[in-house]
Structures are given as C-alpha cells and as structure tokens.
Length: 312
Image 1: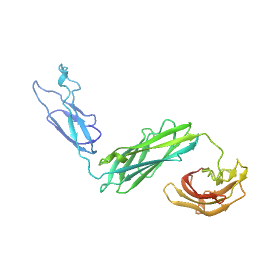
Image 2: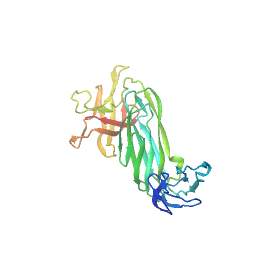
Image 3: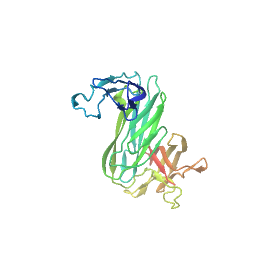
Image 4: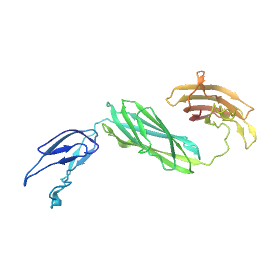
C-alpha cells in the first residue's frame, strides 16, 4: 500500500494476506481456478494514487510473464476546499561572519477556512555548506537526518515555529528552503507552500559603531564577554561615538525579558546593555531575540533586530 492509504481490513476467498508487507499467500489454486482478495483502506491524504498487484513467485514457475502484473488502478481524490498552510522562512542574520552561527526560522500557519490540519510534514534539509548545531520547536519534532519536521496538528490560525541553528564554515552565498510535503487534509493552495532564503557568509571585519556583540557569557569571569555590549569605538577615526539607545529583549517564545529605554552613553569604547539576569535571577542559556533603536552622535535613528546567544 502507498503511504496515503491506511489499512482497515481484508477478505479473501482463499489463502492469507499480510497487511504489513502486502503479500497474499495462496497455498493451492487449481487449473482455471480463481481467487479473490478485497482490501479496505482509508485514504489519509488527498492525492492521486496508483495501485497494482503482481505475481512474486509460484510452484511450478509461471511461464507467461506477460500477465503477471495487473493493470494499474488509479484513484483520484478530491482536495478539501479552503485548506491552506502558509510556509514562511527567514535567516537571522542573513549576512554572517565565517565560523559564526545562523538561525533559520520556519513558521507554519494554518490559515484554512474551517479545518484543523493534522499530520503535517515539512521538509527543510540544510545546505551542505552549513553545519547542523541544534533545533528548537514549539510543536512536533524535527529529524536532522531526513530534514523532516512533523507537526501533529494545527488548529485554525495556529502557528508552529522551528528554529534551526547552523554554523557557517565557508565563504559564499548559500540558499536554504523549507517546503510542504503533506498533511491531512491536503493543502489545496500550493502558491505559499515553500520559501527560500539566501545567506551570505563573509570575512570578519572590525565592528562598526553601534554594533551589538550578540554572544556573551555572564559566567566566564573574564570581564570581557560577561555583559551584552554595544561597540562605540570608531577605529578608522580613532574616536568613541556617543549613543542614545533603547532595546527590548524577548525569549524564543516571544515572552518579554528585559528592556533599556533611552539610555545615553558617551566617552567609552562600549556601552553595557544586559548582564543576563531576569527578574533578579540568572536568565537561562539559549537564544533570545532583540529589537534595538539607536542614534549615534545625535544622528538619524537606526532600527536593528536579531538574535542574542547567551552562553553559560
């Protein structure tokens, strides 16, 4: 049976049928005799399927191979109207230094008209130029070997999120795609069933003023990388710039964690942002999202957003 079928029952005039391997064993069939087998299945995915029966072996050997395979039976199914899954993907950041990490965020939204959608399978295989590190998801499981993300169920308007973290060890511009495989019922709109992102991997350069060092380790004890900081040093002009900034930090589930509002810093090489505590306690290690608004030397406001890696 094809993957789209679920076995229900069988009834044969003779012999025995194995629903696992699909073999029908007939012990004896007299000359000009006929045997029949009825198999009842449930179609669990909307698609078109072809099913055939064929002779595997017999004693004595069948000497007419021309009729050992049946005519194919084609089953055409109808797709339920209004079923629509939206696949969205982005790379954070989409320009990364060689050797650094990039986070691929994949979202699946059930924007159907009326149906709950289940057994959702999404394919996201990493490009060979990336090295897999880890995944986090709020719904289902991701198999790093096959690249399949299985989501058991999405209610109407529900969103499932997968964060796929990888290392970028080579220079170049590389693409990565998330795409729909199947679901029950099947998605009837294939115009939004995949999205591809490009990631540019570049050589490291000196950080520009306003650059947020997005990896820090509060427990390192080296007093260098123990606080989340913003670079204020302009090495080309050999000066330290002034900054006025606000920043909001969220955990990977979108929960608010920390903020700084309209903080002015001057006459230093780096501005302290966050020490890694949350409500008086150490925030857990992991990935956090930030949105930062800042201006340098009283200039135009700049909006920056991305990921922070807290290491313990």
